[in-house]
Length: 416
Image (cartoon, rainbow, N blue to C red):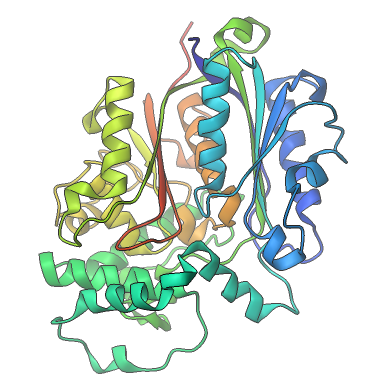
């Protein structure tokens, strides 16, 4: 087995790119990643294309990677298609990493790309989220999830009809209410996460939203699904990201001083656990495997990018990854330790909340941020002295948790 490194990264600005296709967005990210790695496309021996919406919104159900990458000039090489809901491109990274480590390929490409916004397909855009659940048991599972918050006294505003939204916002809100009921987590603590990540985003030139919000402004925003306001929910985004992964065998051909080592990539799926069995959550399982694989622990992590599809999700996942005891993720956000300049900054990119969340590209986008940070190339949002970075990327919902989770650990380039 050889070591594997990320030698090149690239991504598009995130937002609503009405006039750009998935091919356009992918090409821009790939071009940037190849230039960053200092190689031509002929150096790529295999590619993973990660996407969730080309089928349901554009009818391209199969051979998505071939239809997107071949026009760029990738011919003859193996092209693998990865759809694992929001965890698609982190799952693609896992597969490419294993292929490079095993010696099958020396230079691999991972591309995550998503176009979620179409002016004439609003209903389909929201309906697409249901495809990341078990449709056969969806209604009963949703009822079980919504019942998690039973017993929590709700304000009158929580009963209001707030209009069209992703069903995932209702799911996350139910999980938040369960956490509030179990541990006493407050709306203000959840809002503190959103405020922090919106503050971070003003330093990220590729973020969809680039304006700070106070805790009070977050709480005063339009309610989506109690306790989540609009500022606590990730937007629907278009965008793409690409990663060039290389083996130790060929690393001499690249800039070793900018090559970020992949220490571990751990993938887990959910189980039939009880809601209160937090220690069996799939993110905790993936994180423990990743730490063991890398010979590291939570205290070794200097910076993390986590799947904050809602502000509550960051609280939950920070606990599962060992950054706070169960029930204290909200206190972590309030303390300032997870803010730029704190003990362990989380989502310095702005997170999904304000940087954006183009589903199939999100995992690779998280890795883009960690690589910049570990290289010391993140500009105004640079975390000083960052040596070990973590990404956590969840996908879909099944039972009382996500259907898939990928936790990865990365190490800064060698000095000298």
